[in-house]
Length: 449
Image (cartoon, rainbow, N blue to C red; front, side, top):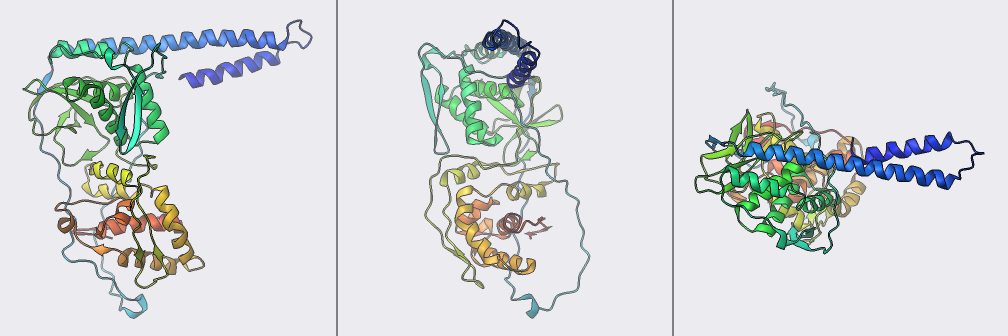
């Protein structure tokens, strides 16, 4: 039961007690109310003290486990993106009634499990901000968004070496309470900016670097903040004495070296080419994997690009001029290529299920909605797909980027070139949002529709 639940329960109890009071009682309502509020305040203080004691005990035990010898593990080669470059560019067909429809041929169908939305990782106890006599702050930037945490840099702790005992001592210092305001502020920023798990990790990495620069303490602090926020992470030490953060994700991510611990993959997301490491592999209560899906828009600060005019070839009246949020595109550019259930084809679902940003929706959805108003379902779908097929210049990822790269819908509307997967993802977003239809992505070897 968290503090908010305790408060609701306690106030309900107060209300019920007040209802049972005899109206003729000599005690006034205000006296009863004050007595109950005082009792609740004492109860709440005791509950918070118990939470603090519980968390302190867990961290003390965790630090003692850290003193034991860390296990040597070899890294594994990064997973590669599945190649999707089509052999030939797609052809825009004329009206269907002018085309001879080919005979249906049976094709193999692979049953791909839908993306499972994991529960949000949460801290094992509520993290409350604790006022300090002199409030000092550390400022940093996350995707163009000014952020700050309340912390006095003069109170920084430092490691005395990089062995197991030095790491354990530093973890005890981190969990002493001095760093809790950093955690409280980060959790509040995550909530206020609606950050996905990956963006939250990037924020914790940014604040750790703002406090410690590029030291072993940086990885330790980031691991502590992730751990206390409910995420499943591990610490490793390479042969040169450097401490590294390893992150477990709900699925596989490409292009990062990883270590398999207890049947799960932990990714080296900040460094590469480390090879073997000694790893502290110990679980923390209720830890959960970092989720790879984006369910809602990340509300990073807006830095608008120039408008880009996009016009349908067959329906020139369908012309829109969106401008993208360059800060959000920076986040998308940082986002790992990921997939679930060991099936690399599921990666496109992560892109397709991400929402269009509010700024882009407001720019293009009214015009597109007006263009399909009063049309049959087939007519409306054809108008939207003609826009998707003809308003953009085609290039394969290999030509445009030199490597395979899928686009979130906002990215297709911004970048000068796109390919079949990008347009299929964008079209699936449009028909779901504007027509209320369901959509699937069809994967053919070398092509997506």
